Structures are given as structure tokens and as C-alpha cells.
Image 1 (spheres, rainbow, N blue to C red):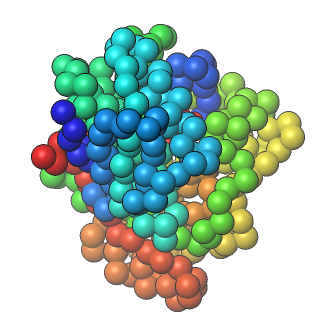
Image 2 (tube, rainbow, N blue to C red):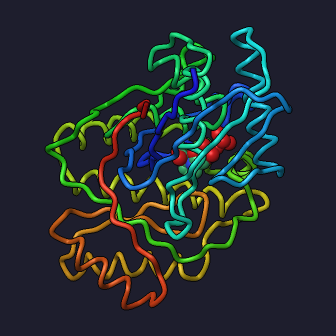
Length: 321
Ligand code: 2P0
């Protein structure tokens, strides 16, 4: 039955940055994320009599993104032994201005819409595994609040679970700061492959278990300072790996460095905040409610045209009808 499924994007506080298996999208490390309330994708699948179609924001897509969606649908159809041509209708409520990647919400919503369309009886763990096959980070968008994607060793054991779906205690905001809207030149898949040539990749990987445990404790203890320090360190490690790959590369732009310095200056002034950065030049700043205004104003004064979205915890995947 055609149903609209909504999934929210998530931002990793401990990053996934390396695949053990490209086809199954098995990660080399576990990761931990925060699901965001402000950004989400709504997807509905209907039957088609004219081959597969993919509509994004009501515009039919025929580029690489459509090929990726169709390849994913084929994979799921083979997996469940079902057939038929499909029309995928997605509305992305991820403002371009936010500079956020939308593949986490996109493939989580697509996996959910697929299961709804074929009336497949899957639990959240299975849905997380299916979403993972579309995009690694999508495995985490099945859940609200904080989610952990345990790396596992195969398809059956690599899935995400909710660490805390409703973290009411935690005063945590993520300011998505858009500095640069240019599409990135190196995809996440390409970047994470190249990163493995860094001499620091293995030592970083060796730290994953310890970093996951420390972040989990910070969340359980409602310790914002520790959470922010760990998130910032983990993101910096990921970007240091990129810089030291052979050949080295970076997603940073000059404004990214400026933003990193601004975060340090704000902290020196007693405004507690931390950054995290994904596979792009834009910066996300973690802070508590009492500092949202000061951090926002500081960024606006330095980056006159920057668009800033204040996000907090979002819910897990849901059916809208
Ligand atoms: C993450 N990122 O944990 C990391 C941190 C970007 C930096 O997952 O190749 O689109 O589809 O599995 O999930 C972005 O990569 O990669 C990502 P694929 P995905 O959120």
C-alpha cells in the first residue's frame, strides 16, 4: 500500500568514514549520531506502468541520483523477491541553505516507503539494515534522539539501534551553518576510500571503540562539555586523516577554518560551543540553549551571508498516513 514515510537526517558525533564492504556498506567503525528535528525527507512509492521514475521535490530526476535510487530499489526487490515498476516521490525538507547532506534521511525514508508499499513486515533493526544498503548513515535515521550504528561483521550484524530516543534531559542544539553551497567535488564514498591511505587511518580506527564508549558515557551522564569535546576531536581526526591521505585532500574551504577559529574564540569568551564537520565545507556548532543566540549572532557578524538553522532532537521514522 502506498504510504508516505518520513525520516529525519542525522549528524554523526562519532563519524563513519571507511567501508569494510562496498556492496553491503559495512563500515570499518561504529558511529553515533544525533537525529535532527529540522531536516527530513518524505517519500511515497506508487506503482508505475511506464518504468521506474524518481521525483524529487516534484521534479523528475534522470541523473546519477535517479540511477542510485533505481539500483537500490532493484537490490531490495531481489532481496524480497518482489517485482514491479515503481514511482518514487520524495520531498526533501532539507533546506539547501543548511548545507547538510540528505542521503541519511533520503535512504531511510526510501527503505520505509518500500516496505510500506510491498506491505513487508520488518522491525526497526531490519529496516536499519535495509537503509544501510542505500547509504551508510541512513541506518541511523530510523531512530530519533541518539542512535548507534554498530559496525558488525556482516549484513545481519551491521545495524543501528536507539541509544536514547527521547533525550529530554540533554540540553543540546546543533546550529547548521551554511558557508558554501557548492556541490562537493569528492563524494563521501570516494573520500572515505582515499582516507584509508593515510598513515593515521589505522591508529584512528584503533581508537573507535574507546571513542564510542566515551561518547556513550557523556550522553548517559548528560555531560555536554564532554560530548562536545569528543565530537570536535572525532571530527578533527577524520579531517586530519583526509589531509594526510596519499594523496591528501580536504573538504575545508577558507571559511571552514575561519569558523573553527571563531568557535575557539567563543569558547575563550566563555560561550561554550564545539564544532563538527562532515564531508563538506560547512560547519555545525553544538551548544546549549542559553548560548544559541550569542553563537548565532557571532557567526552572522563574521559571515554576513551565512544561513543558520537551529536544530535539536528529531524523531525516528514514521508513516504519515
Ligand atoms: C557520517 N558521513 O557518519 C559520516 C561522517 C560523512 C562524514 O556518512 O557511501 O552518504 O552512502 O555509505 O552515509 C556520509 O556518507 O555514505 C557520511 P555512503 P554516506 O555521517
